[in-house]
Image (tube, rainbow, N blue to C red; front, side):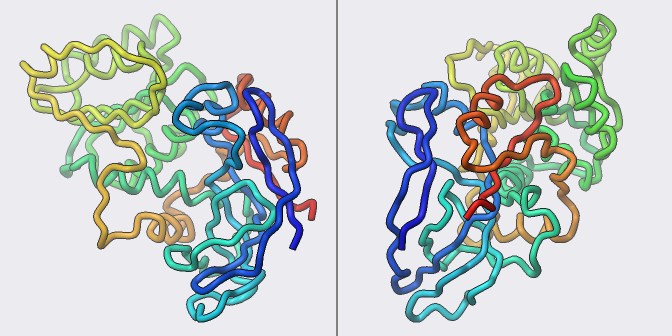
Length: 318
């Protein structure tokens, strides 16, 4: 059948193009996407970063949710009408049924049911090696930082401190369970962070993706503590390997590929945790766009105005 998908054709250019979607084969289902998140990974490709790794033109997207419209031969785990996690920015697409979690019920707000970002945090939480009573500092309260805060707030921590430049983001972090929030863009916030060096943290999670944030992060780790670099740094960074060595830090690249235990399905667990309300993305979705307006949506995601946290594409124009 004929359908459509979103392509990045060249830097700073997104287009809706017609595609052909065959009937699903064995162990496949056809999924009609309903909503799909705009990740900073897509923003990086849009602005011509990481295109050496993933050359353009290409269909993009990986944070979707949709409905099964066709079931391939031999598939018994999925039925037409099931709500499932999906990937690409395509109105219709075939996916392997294996590893495609089925939601227990239709989500009340599909634009806020983005399981893949939560999957990344679920894997990271396992890698953080938390001990009850740990003191944790999160630097950066953007979309992924806030999901980290939501997950960490359910752990038995003594302190959960969050630092960011945006007061509204800090208010959200506090509502999610942060025990203290610090505006690192003010003199008072800088002074407070400096004072906390006297009582360094067991774990510092860096979610800002900037060189200054990474520098602050490594100054606040106790001897033998842990630094989790959660954000994706697209440029080389300078760090003090001498400090890392002398202080015995454990450094975790806590991205989506960490803590892969093949007996644990992080995506399925992310779906169940979203359904249970442990993670709630609704307050973080600040911009919703029709998928046919993807060019504008990407330009806005690149600009990131002051109220921007997360944009989502809606594929309701069938």
